[in-house]
Image 1 (cartoon, each protein chain N blue to C red):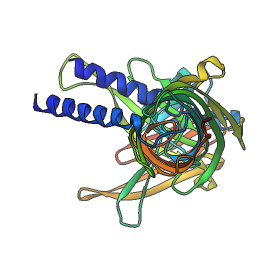
Image 2: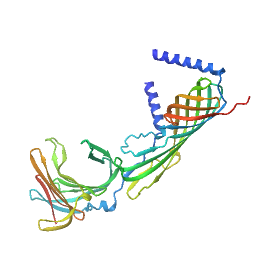
Image 3: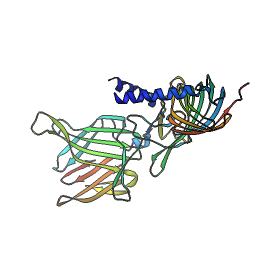
Image 4: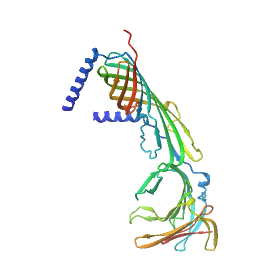
Amino acid sequence: MKRHLIFCIALVAVMASCVKEPQIYRRLSDEESAIVPYQMGQTIRMLNQDDDTLCFTVVHDTTYVAYNYYDSRYNPFGKMSIEPRPYFYAREVVLQSPPENSCLLRCIVAPEKVVTVTYEELRLYQDRDFYYWHTLLGRTLPLNDLATTTVTIGETTYEDVHVDQGSYMADTTMVSYAWYYSEQQGLIAAKHGDYSLTLIP
Amino acid sequence: MKKILFVFCLMAFFSGTAFAQLDTVRSNKNEFSIGYGVMPSSSFRFKPGQHYYPLGENVGAIYATYTRRLNKVIGIGATYCFDPRVYTYYEKPSTKEGLICRLGESSHTLMFHLKINWLNTKYVNLYSKVGQGVMAWGYNLKEYQPDLYQINMPSNKFIDRIDYAYQFVPIGVEIGTKQYAGFIQCGLGMEGIISIGFRYGLKDKE
């Protein structure tokens, strides 16, 4: 016991004179924050894959410090390396549907116009008395890297829309996805596998 | 038990050796020395929970000491240490992309030390040293973009920038004459893990 105590005191003494690290946070500018155009109390309507109309109302709008900001990439040996990045401010806007629909739309904007959109549904956890938000659709859109174009969805034409589309193999089936996001209107449309959301103007 | 006995024997041996030096060739009463050490403890990086570290350029510690010898074995004195450091923070440190800021840090240390010469010969001396004191550190930020980054320094008050300082040298070697000598020492603390320097001994009055 005494030996451990002496060791601890010695360790604290050694560490006392170490370099003091500053905390660095990447700020979120007003311009970047406005990439998610929804305001508190605002309501939008969307059509889902079953042609049901969902009403989403902004119930939560907050800016916070996000800690898990890592940049992953592949090194020349083909192995993925994860590089830590500074902490950053992110703005999260949650749009919730009425209780009968039990779903929400979550938009998070990070610096450099990186937007993450998820469409979640409230589900019962394995028949237990416990509910959780299950993500039906979700994607991170680096808007600076996505070109803008004019798209027509339904009968409405939108300009300056960032488009992210493609497909990938999941097990034995090909899954296609397409996301349309406007800096002025927010999420225009999203389709990923069997699920979809389309803005009703 | 064996270990304790071994340490006890070792101490007895060195104390005997040390007192045997009382009547040998050493030493000057007043000694000045300057030195340079690598990896002083003031440039160690440790912060629990901090995931993000900068690219650092450590110059190393430069120090000056004065030792007043009470006899040929025991000396007490003071040490001043200066340790400048430059840290560069990037958004992506591996590729040096996105400069966040350059942080210049420096620490000034004042310690009182006890030096024990446990072997004195005509040209070679072996010694141990232990020092305790205080360190004050400061910083300045350069090339910092406040509109893009918020940087919270650990402290803005001077009183919070004073820390405990120490030096522990289990073994050091001085090679030279009674008046001029070069030295190399290894240990842990503000003078660095390994340091080299030059010692000048003032001539004693006859």
